[in-house]
Length: 321
Image (cartoon, rainbow, N blue to C red; front, top):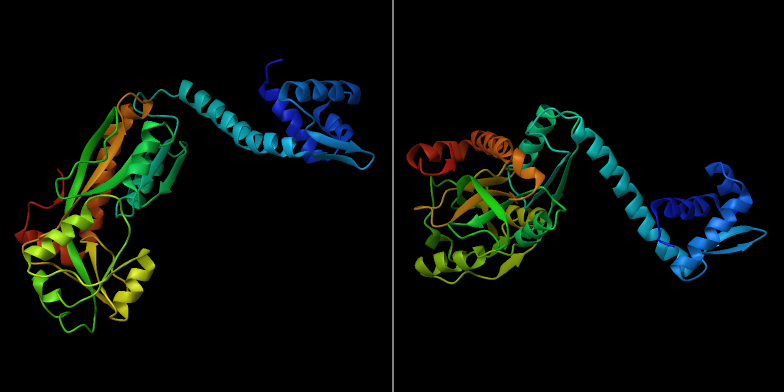
């Protein structure tokens, strides 16, 4: 006997009801009929799924394993059916069943979700964040995400993957975060060399940014002091108590007690990319999603007064037209 979804529903029903008799009532079946079906399911799966006695039915270890898979598969199949019906009844050639977005930490995701939910109010939008651009790219190529928002250092390419398309959203300089009472906080911009004696706080990533930063420091004539690699919240704390300085995207939204300073000559640059699988259904919506992402980036630029002022003299940066 081949295992079918209805068999998994029976197993789940018995586990939730705690007895075959109660499960039969919930399913609208005669108890002997459900018992016979459960025995056939157990033969197909290689052993008993429940220990049954006068107190009810309790999953065996095999039953627990089957239930754990059923709790993933059954909702996924229901979601597939709902998406398929929605897609079949949709007259918009650019719309897709849902927008599954993945992003590294950056300024675009919130604005992109805002625009997608406004333009497609009945279409599901879900998000996932990761510090790893490779992980997000892999999830797109395997069909677990529709789009990935990632950053790359300078002109470095995105992670290698088959059948991926990438579009540049914008390009930002990398600024430095200081405590507002730091001796250099009043400068209009800083030469990187003036930070030679500082410790650094950085968030993790899997691109070449660490190497590019080390190279920029070498050109400025120093080797960076010990680096604290940690989460963003801890980075900000260390900067605020003057235990470190931190690099940040120029769109960073400042918190109390911190100032953001441009680096002279913009020795480091961060490029925002949106990627999708070339052969996926999501590709049909890619042009509009790219435009939404660029609008979200432009909003982030406008919210950063320091960056907006800096852009007047450095127009090669910012959102792509």
